[in-house]
Length: 293
Image (tube, rainbow, N blue to C red; front, side):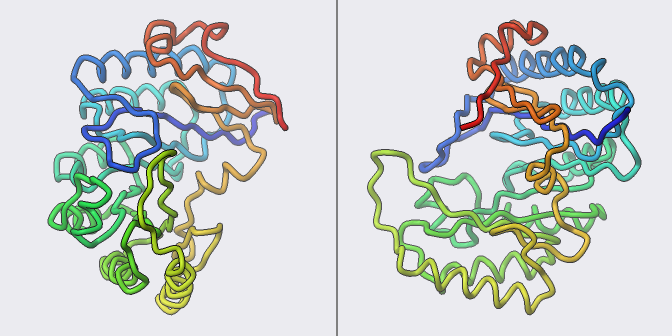
C-alpha cells in the first residue's frame, strides 16, 4: 500500500563560509560538485525501487548551497527524480539559495525543472550586519533575489532572517523585516543566530524579545500567520516540507550527515563525504540506525 513520501537532497558546498556558520560545508569546485552530483544520483537510484508508486509530496534541496552545483547537474538530478519517483503536478519542490547566487539563468533552470518554491537566505537587510557575520550577500543581490521570483511567476518564495546578530538592535531587525515584507515574500523564517563554540561576541540578548514581539505584530498586520515556531506564511503558502518533518510520514534524505525516517525508524547517513562520494550505493557503509533517546 502506497504512503506519502518526502525527499530531501543535501548539497554541502558553499562558495564562502560565513563567520558564524555552524554547518559542515566544503569548498565548491567543478570537480567535487560533479562527483557529488553523480553520487546523489547513484544513491537515489539505489533507494527508489523500495518506494515505487509512493506519491512524493515534497522535494527539498538544502545545504550548504544547492546552486553550487552546475545548472546541468541540477537539471540532470531533477529529471532522474521524476523518472524514479511518483511526482504529482502539485508536488512542492523547494530550493534553498543565497541571494548572490540567484540570477535570471537560475530562474530559467528552476522553471524548466519544476521548482515552485525558493528559500532565500537573506540573513539581514543591513550592510553592517552582513559584514559582521561575514556574509557574501549584498543589498543589490538581496533585492534582485526578491524581484526575480515575481518576474518569473514563481508560486512561492520565502526569506530567512537572523536575529541576535552581534550589535543588532530591535530597530535594526525591524528594518530587515520590513524590507522582506515590502517585496511580498510568501513566507518568512526567523532564526536565532547560533554562535560556534569558543566564539565570543557581544550579542544584545535583551533586544531579542522586542524583535520577536515586533515581528509578531507586523507580520500579523500584513496577513501572515505563525504555523510553526518562527515560521510565518500567508495562508496556503506554508512550507509543506517543514510540516512533513514534524509528521511521521516517510522522509528520505540523501547526502552525508542526513537522517532518513521510514515507517517510524530513523537511520543516519555517513558524515564522511569521501566515503559517500565513493560508495553511494553501498548501504552497509552509508547508513547507521538512530536510537531514540
